[in-house]
Picture 1 (cartoon, rainbow, N blue to C red):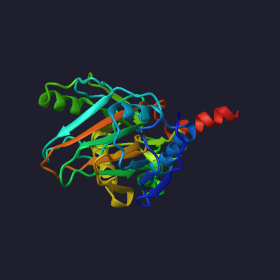
Picture 2: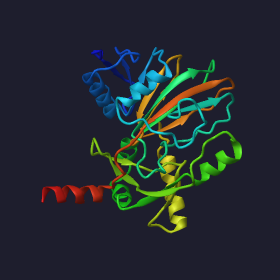
Picture 3: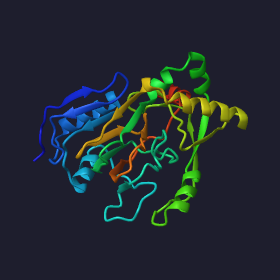
Picture 4: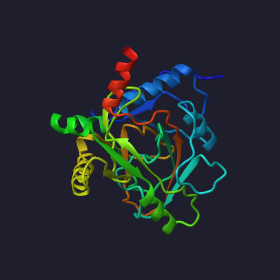
Length: 286
């Protein structure tokens, strides 16, 4: 039977992140507990669980409490096609840059559940950044300017890199989509900055030199420590984040095995900019 728990939520920083205790993810959760975790996720954007010795099947079941489990954009063939295995054993990383998962999709993932399977003795932390705060920290003039722009998100570059370096990956066709630079979050209705250095290639409305300068500024802007938390992994730690409003960075400062299992949760909303959201709201009211 589903288990009812009383969660304890402890914020990590003033900007982002919280640790949740008082719940056993090996057990089936009732609707009230799932709703409480979802609210903590919306409030803190990334939530962490310690000492959760769960199986792959239990990780999938937990992720499925929040939406349909999705297939990863890039994956090695495994018995569980919905689980991406990140297996690195040196400081050479491929996720040591600020990014949002699969933003090149027309409907990007809602979120992700990441589980520590094997960890180095030191290093291997993951940083997370709040894109609401990143947007709010910009000047009103810059905010207004960005609200009228769209950006191209593409997997073309990363597809080429993975094809060259990994022969055992299932890699989807190269693809590019356009998303608003400022996304109105579909649940909180707050504005957030939606460009990332891994997938965003240009601003549609600007000439190439202007686009390059603006994106370089925004990519540097999101690196501010004021927007971040840094999570130190321990055995059986789990992180879950809102991929719509969060960017993350896997710190590649280790020289031993680091194995992580990630499950993506499918999104249901295509990114909508402020002007489109206001138009839609006006249409509903009329």
